[in-house]
Each structure stands twice: as C-alpha cells, then as structure tokens.
Length: 239
Ligand SMILES: Cc1cc2nc3c(=O)[nH]c(=O)nc-3n(C[C@H](O)[C@H](O)[C@H](O)COP(=O)(O)O)c2cc1C
Image 1 (cartoon, helix red, strand yellow):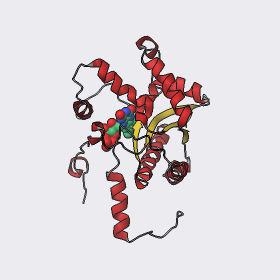
Image 2 (cartoon, rainbow, N blue to C red; image 1 turned 180 degrees about the vertical axis):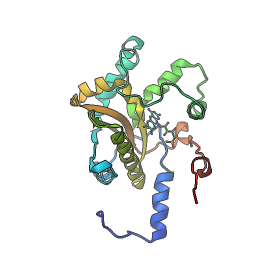
Image 3 (cartoon, rainbow, N blue to C red; image 1 turned 135 degrees about the horizontal axis):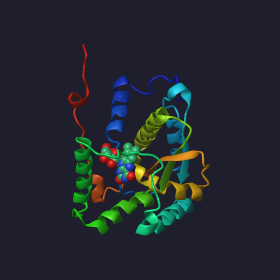
C-alpha cells in the first residue's frame, strides 16, 4: 500500500472499516500477556507516519519498550511513585490538563473517573486503592508494549496538535490489527526519570505514553465504554 493506492475493497467496506476502527478505539486498562509481533508494531508506526503535520514537520519520536526495558522502567517509576516524598519531587513537563477546571469538562472528568472506580468497586475516598489503580498506568496496564512519545522542545503548540493526530493514527492502526491501546498522560510526571533511564536527549520533551496490546476480556475495567456528546452539541452548521 502506498499514498496513491486505490481502494483495497468496495467503498462501503472501506467506509465501514475506517469508521469501525475509529469508533471501537477505547482506552483499555488491562491487557493479555500475548506478545505483539514486532512487524505489527512497525507496521502501526509505518502507517501513523502519514499523519498530517504543519509544513510536513513530522515532530514525533517514539520509544518502543518491550521485555526487560519496559519492566525496568516500570520498576524504577514504581519505586518513586510508592514513596510520596520522592513522588512530590516530580512534575509534568507541560500542562496537559487545565490548571482550573470548569464545567462541562470537570463533570466529564469526574464521570469517567467514577465510572472506572465504580466498575472496580473502589469507593470515593479509598485513597490506597485509587493509588494502586493509578499505579497500574506505570506497568502499562500489563500490556506487552509500552510506547513513549517525545517532541523537540523548541517546537510550538501547533506541533502538539500535529502530534495528537499521530497518536490517533497509532491507535486507529492498532485497531486495524485487532490491538488495543491506552494513551497515558500519567507518565508525564516522571518525565525526568524516563529521560534519564532511556537516554533521551535534553532537547526532547515527553508528550505522553501509551499501552499497546491485546485487551483482556475478563477484566471488568475493560467493560468501560465512555459516552460522547452528539454532533448537534458541538457542531454549528452555517448554510
Ligand atoms: C493524551 C491522553 C492521555 C490520557 N492519559 C490517560 C492516563 O494517564 N491513564 C488512563 O487511564 N487514561 C488516560 N487517557 C484515556 C482517557 O481517560 C480516555 O481517552 C477518555 O476517558 C475517553 O475514553 P475512551 O478513550 O475509552 O474513548 C488519556 C487519553 C488521552 C487522549
């Protein structure tokens, strides 16, 4: 397949396949140990690189972690994350979330949080269990592949917009191969540790992490299906 390839199936099938891949992308938070074939990982990145970017800047760099490299990073983060004093020394490299939350974003944030904790039977205020669930982020939710995405710090906000398109392409291409993902801003807090461990150049900034693998259908957290506002709530048509 190349950039000028004709439709690989009927227009209806292509339409359905593309819509299916986008719609069935969900954040999965428990993965099977089944390995992901190296050729699938490479094919996903190979497709995602065709994402659009302003003046074709292609601002991404991806660190693909598997096996011992992934386990070593997870252990290093867990050591710090389990020590509140040490964890307090760490902070995000950029403001992914707003400093001040307002409606409707705060309500949506709360809704997804309580839906996840509700499924896991974690009560409001049960800080140890909430922390333990959050800590699963740093094990890439047991996915066999952990991805860490970085960008040159000198680039502007627009390049983060471009990066988001690349991340979505990675997640959609994963669906096309029967794989699932979870994008993860939670790694941001430990960006300096991650950079040190992976030898990431100082001019590169962590954008986010992502788990990649086969969803574990037996885990209750994977039954979470988040809602969306209808088109009429966010689109204004000007005839
Ligand atoms: C950039 C980005 C960072 C995210 N970070 C996390 C994270 O650290 N941990 C997590 O469990 N989910 C994370 N999510 C997943 C969101 O909670 C999820 O996308 C949202 O609730 C919508 O649900 P859905 O992905 O299942 O459609 C992140 C999503 C995005 C796009």
